[in-house]
Length: 298
View 1 (cartoon, rainbow, N blue to C red):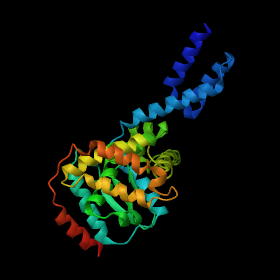
View 2: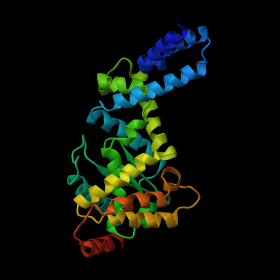
View 3: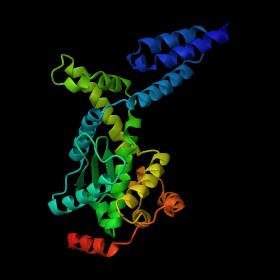
View 4: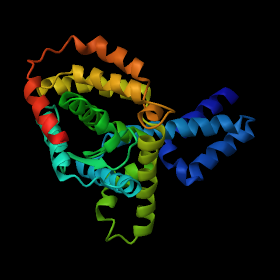
C-alpha cells in the first residue's frame, strides 16, 4: 500500500510540476511524502526535474513573436553590460555575411529577422539570443584570419538560434504559460503588469546566465558546430573555416575566459568537426572573399 502511495505522489508531483513554483501543490506533495516517511529532498528533486521537463516541452510552443521579445530583452541586457562597438562598415559587413548564410538556410525568416552587433571588448566570445540577435566581440573578430572563419563564427550562432538552444534554459513555467496564453503580448496594458514583468525578468535572467555565465551544454555546442558546417556549405563558404577558427581559438584561449569558459575545448570541437567535414564539398572562391576581408580590415 505504501508503495502505491509513493507512486501516486510521484505521479502527482509530475503532473502538477508546472504549478509547483507557486508552492501549494508542491507543499502538498512534500507533506504527503513526510507522512509516509519519504525523504523530502527526493520529492524536491522530482519536482525540479518534472518542472524543467515541462517548461522545456512547453517552450516548443512559444510563438516567433514570443521568442523575439524574450531575445530582445536578453539582448538589451547584454548591450547594457558591454558597450556596442561603433564601426558601421564592419557591422554591415558582418550582417551581409549573416544574411548570406540565413537566406540559404532551412529557416531564413524570423519574426524580425537576424541582426549582428559588435561588442567593444577584447574578450573572445559571441552570443546568440532567441529571436535572431547575434553579438560578436571585437576580440573574437580580431582572431579571425579570413572571411570564412568569421562566417563560421556567425554560422555557429545562427545554428544556436535555429536549433532554439537558448529556450531550453527557461525553467520558469510561469513565463511559458503566460507567453502561450498571450498574457505577455499585452503586458503594458495589463492590470498585472508588475507580476508579468517579474515573470519576464526571471526568464531573461535564466537565458543570460546560460549565454554569458554557464554556456550551453557540450552536446548543444557540438550540435551547433555540426549544423554550422551545413549552413556554411549551403551559403558557399568553406566549412573548413570552422576548423580554422577553432585552431586560432585554441592558441588564444587563456585562463578560461570567454569561449574557454562557456564552450567545450577546441580540441573536442575540432575532432567533432573533422568527423563531419568530409560530407561537404564547396567550390573554392576564397580569393574573392580574401580581398573583401582584407579591404574591410584596413
